[in-house]
Structure formats: C-alpha cells, structure tokens
Image 1 (cartoon, helix red, strand yellow):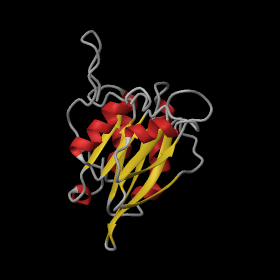
Image 2 (cartoon, rainbow, N blue to C red):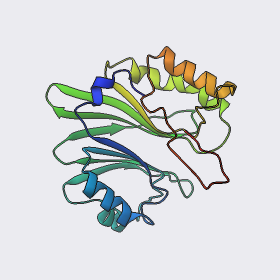
Image 3 (tube, rainbow, N blue to C red):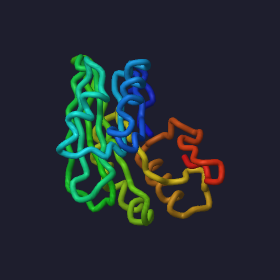
Image 4 (cartoon, rainbow, N blue to C red):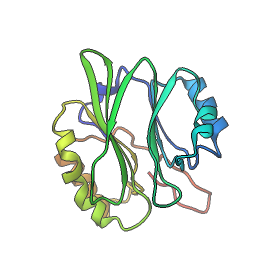
Length: 196
C-alpha cells in the first residue's frame, strides 16, 4: 500500500516471502540475478547470527542487505536487499504489535527519497494488529508524501465481511494508503484457500 503510486514508478521492487533463505538460497539468487530489482523486500528469512554463508550464496554481487532477524525463536525475520548504487537506511522501534518491522528510506538521487515500512505479521490473533497498526505507522506515513507499506500481514483482504479485515482497511484508508495489488499473492495447495 502507498500514499503515492508515483513514488515507486522509478524503482524496480519485488516482495518475496522466502520461508528460509538457507533452504531457497539458489532460487533467491536466480530471482535477483534474472529480474535485477533495485530493491527486494524479503519476509520470513529465517536467518540468525550464523547466517553469513546463506547470505553469500543467496545475493548476487552488486547487492547489499539490511536485515532484522527474529532472536527469540526460529522462523520469521525480514530483510531488504538493494543494489549498492542505492542508499538505503533502516530503523526499528519498540512496538506493541505482534509483528516484525523495518522502517526504511531509499534514496536513489539527492532529490528522491522513498520512505516506508516492511512488516511481517505471523499467523495469530488479528484484532490487536488491525486496531494498533494505524497508530504505529501514522508517524511514518504522514511524515512523507511518498510512503509505502509492504510485507506479509497474513490477512485475507478479500474477506469483506471479516471485522478485523474491515478495521485494517479502514485504518489504511484513513492514512491515505491505497492498495496497489488487487489479486491473490499467495496460492497454497489446491485444498487450501487462496490468500491475499
């Protein structure tokens, strides 16, 4: 979601749920090498302090990485991979959200800065997240005319009758955020539901 679709027009960005950089290092390397995105946002990296070899085999030459590993249990983790010609700074803050996050600023030239937040919310109770997300991101979204929120929130956005989904979307709309992706982004096995 973004407050300004034009903000990402000049950047080639991808969002990937890796479900383990270690297990999918070759596929991730091939994806980055073939698509050559300016920035790749990755959720569920499953990395930790001993993951340096995984990173070396997953990221082609010419890219850097900024990451936040999950430290209290396995799984989770998020990262931003970017071309070394681009300036990316990240920060994090204490939050009541049951989610992992990185706030970022991407500067491609002295006049162009894109601000945003990468969020991964694991499966679990949704009401606390949908209620608290607006307060959490509003200082960042309102501080810049060019703001983007992306990640894996584990919400079924197509379920219009779900009060948690309605609350989440209302909070986003109140911040001026517009959904850019309107199709399913995750398709599981045929016997499971498609989820956006």
